Image (cartoon, rainbow, N blue to C red; front, side):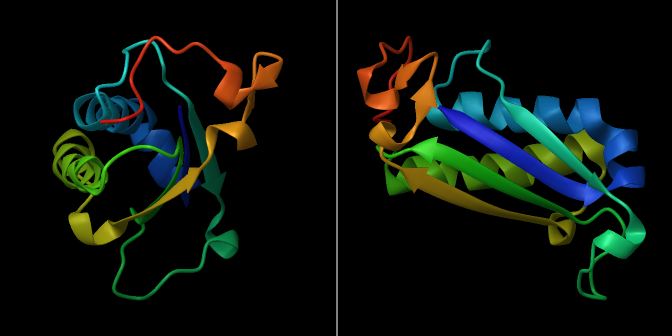
Length: 129
């Protein structure tokens, strides 16, 4: 499971939403061997006064918060980071300096999905990659 929140200025999000979603999902599928149909993205589009960031970032600055089940190797998580820094700029024109991300891992038992705890689910993909 991967739930992804994408924060950015409304003007940026509105301009590149589809390309950003596609490049993020492509990265997750490659790095985590994730099924194509499992896309969970939430865009949080902020107004200028609600999004404060350092002066060395542009108005394209985005933050990704990626919540996943525990179980991926360090190599798989680093592969995801590399994929995101490769695919997002190509698809959207957002510079690497304007992308920051955090991966949050929690036990499957801390997730509730389809009426049950995440550790009780049968998945059609492997978490341990």
